[in-house]
Length: 248
Length: 143
Image 1 (cartoon, helix red, strand yellow):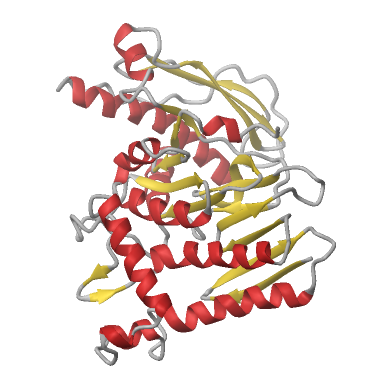
Image 2: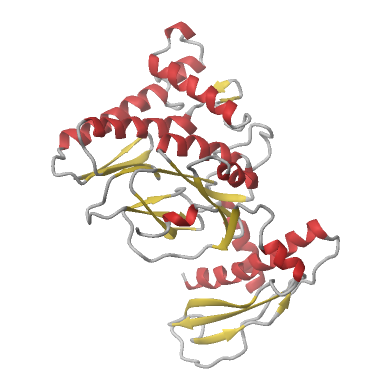
C-alpha cells in the first residue's frame, strides 16, 4: 500500500509491503507529520516554534516534543563542533533535525504495529525497513544535482536511513554558522547513509555546512557512509560506500 | 536536451581540466596552459538527427599540467551516448599521488547517470545554482 501527500511543503510517501497494511496505518503517519508541522513549522505563525520565536511562550510552557528537539539540537551542535546550529539571527529553526526525527518516529509507529517491510520518504529523506515489493533490498536512487530527472547512483538498503542535502536554485537554504555570510558553493549535493534517518538527517545538515570537509567528517562516523558531489560533477565518497552499490 | 548533453560533455572536460588546475595551484604557482579539446577528429558517420552529427569523435590531447586529458565521444541520433577518457592525468608521479587522494579513506569518481529502476529517490529538489554557473561558462566556450 503506497500513499503520497503534500505536507510540510514537500511530498511525503509511505509504502507498506506487508499484507497487513491498511489505509488507517498510512493515515496515522500523515497525521503525525501534520502534527509535527503544526508544532515545528518556522513559517506558520500559529506553530509552537513561531510562538517561541516571537516570545509568546515561556520556556516552562514548552511541550515535551519541543524540549526534546531542543535537547537533541544542542547535543548535535556539540557533536558537530558547532556546525549544526538551530539559532540564526536570534530565531530558532530546528528543521535540519526535525524532519529526520519525525521520519524516525513515524517509522517506529509502523514497527510497533508489527509492520516489517516499508519505506517512508519525506522530501527525499528516507527510512527503509525490510524488503521491497519484489522481496529484495530497497533500491534508492541518488538524484543528479544537475538534472532532477536522473539518478547518478543506486544504493541497496534494508534498514538504513538516507538523507541528502543540496544547494537549490532558489537560494542556499543551508549556511555555515561559522561564516554565515559565506555561500556554500563548492558542494552541490551530499548524501549520507546512516543506521537510521534521524542520524542521517542531522549529520548531513552539519556536514554540508562544512563544505568540502563535510565528507571527511562523515567518514569518521562509525556506521555512516557518504557521497558528496561538487560543483564540477566530481564525487568524493567514503571508503565503505560501495558496499551499498551492490544488490546483495 | 541535445544542447544539455553537449554542455555536459563540455563540463566533463572542464571538470577534468579544472581538477588538475586546482590541484596544481596548491602545489605550484605555475599557470597551466588553457586549452580545450575540439571534437572534430575521426568523424566516421555524417548522418544526423539533431544538432550533432552521428559518429565517434576524439578530442585533442590537452596538457592539464599534471598530465594529458583526451576524450572520445560517441554520438547516436544526435545525442552523446558515450564519453571515454583516452588519457587522464595519471602518467606522471605527481598526479598519480594526487589521484590516490589526500585523504586515504575517501575515493573519487566522475558522476555518471544510472538508468536502472529504483523504488525511492533521495536528493535535493531543484537544479543547483553552481551548475547553472558552470553550465553558462561551458556554453560560452562551446559557442
